[in-house]
Length: 84
Image (tube, rainbow, N blue to C red; front, side, top):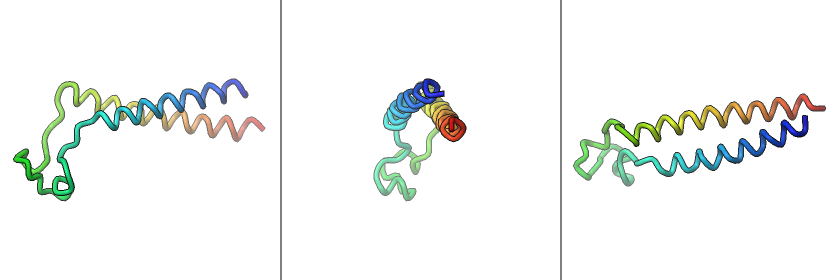
């Protein structure tokens, strides 16, 4: 059980790094506080636009990483509680 736990911890750390990178790479829909509130201010239509191409791929890859991280974390909790 200890080797499974070690693999899960390493996998969780790697997924965390990829997840952080995926979130940081994404382009914000609207920049600044005005865009967050809904003003936009840069002529982009109030901050709403659709994702296309690479931006869409990064978005969905980030969600896959979120799900993988969640599953890995739950598996790590299960292994920890059932190893005693």
